[in-house]
Image: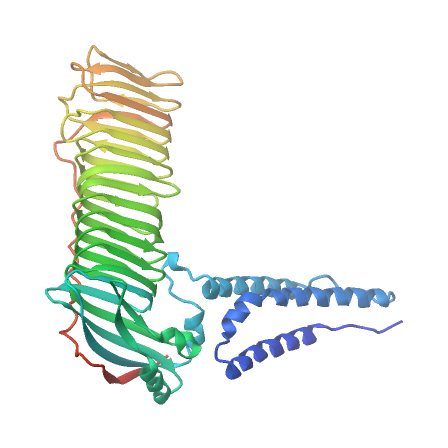
Length: 495
C-alpha cells in the first residue's frame, strides 16, 4: 500500500509570510508605497492561492488512487477561511473606504504613519487684501478656523503636525513646507506646496486659524479636518471629506457638503443648505430657508427657522414652515414643539409627535405612531395616513371641525360628542364621521392597523427643556508678522 501523502499547508503559509514581508521591505526602498493599501487591495489573492493549492491537492490525490483523498476542508480550515474573509473585509473598509458616516476617521495614511513620531511647528504671517475678498482654500489637510474682524488683511496662524522618524527629519520637512496667500483673478487663494514634498505630503497636517475681513466670502474644501467659520458677512461654501463643520453668526448663504461628521449652524441671516451624509445636525436661528438633503444617521435638531425648512432622505421627505419652536428627529422618531406654518411629512418606521401646531398638518407614515396636540382650535385641514400605527389627535374642547376617520382592523375613540358626529365601533372598519360645531376645517385620518383617538387637549402640552447654547468658537490670536516666522514647539509625542 502506498504511503504517499501531500501536505501543502506549511508551503502555503510560508509563501504568504514571504509575500507580506516583501511588501513591507519594498516600502523601505520606496516610501511612496503603502503596504496596508496594497494588502487592502490584493488580500483576496490569498483565497485564490488557497484554492489553487486545493486544486493541486485534488490532482495529486487522483495521481495516487490507492490513497484516501483528504476532505475538502477540515474544521480548522473553515474557521481560518472565515477569519481571513472577515479581517480582509475590515482592512479594505478601513483603508480604502474610510467609515466617515460612522464617525471613524481612520484611513491608510494613518495606519502607515502610526509607527512614526509626531512633531509640532508653528508659523504666522499676514497678507493685505481688499475690503470684500473672496477666499479660496482647497486641498486642506487639517482643521480650519476662520473669524471675521474689522481689518483689511488676512492673518494666518498655522500649526504643523509632521510625522517622521526623528526631530531632524521633521524639521527639514517643516522648512521645506511653504504657505502663502496669492491673489489669483480676484480670488485670494491660500495654498501650500505640501503635495510636492516627500510622500506627497501624507505625513503633514496643517491646522489653520485665519482672521479675515468680516465681508469675506469663503470657499473651503478640506480633505481631512474640522471647519469653523464665525462672524462673516458673505456667502460661505464649506466642503469636508472627514470632519465636523460649524458656522455661526453669518450674514449670507451657508452651503455645506459633508461626507461624515457633525454639522452645527447658528445665527444665520440668510439661507442654509446641507447635503451629503454624516452624523448629528444642529441648525438654529436662521432668517431664511433651510434645506437638508442626504443621509444623516445622528440626532437632528432644528430651532427657530423663520422661513421654510426642507429635509429629504431615502426614508423621509419633510417640509415645515415657520418653525418657531424646536424639531428633534432621529432614525425612529420625530418631535416638533411649536410650528406656526404648514407641516407635511412622508416617512416610514418613525413615531411622529407634533405639539402646538397652528396650521395645516399632512402626515403619511407607513409604520409608526402619530400624536398631534393643538393648544388652540384648528383653523386648517389635518390629514394623517398610516398603514400600521395608532393616531392620536388632541384638540381643545371648543374646537369646530369636520371629520372622516377610518381604522381598518383597529378601534376608534372620541371625547367629542354631538348630534352631528357619528361614532361606529363595530365591524371591520370602525369610523368617526360628521362634524362638531359649525363648519371648521376638515380632519381626515386613515389607518389600517391601529387605534384612532380624538381627545380633548390639555391647555399646555409638556415641552422638553431647551439645551444650552454652545459657546462661540475661540478667536485666533492677534495679527501675524509680515514676514515668515517659524517656532518649533519643544513638546512632541510618539505615535
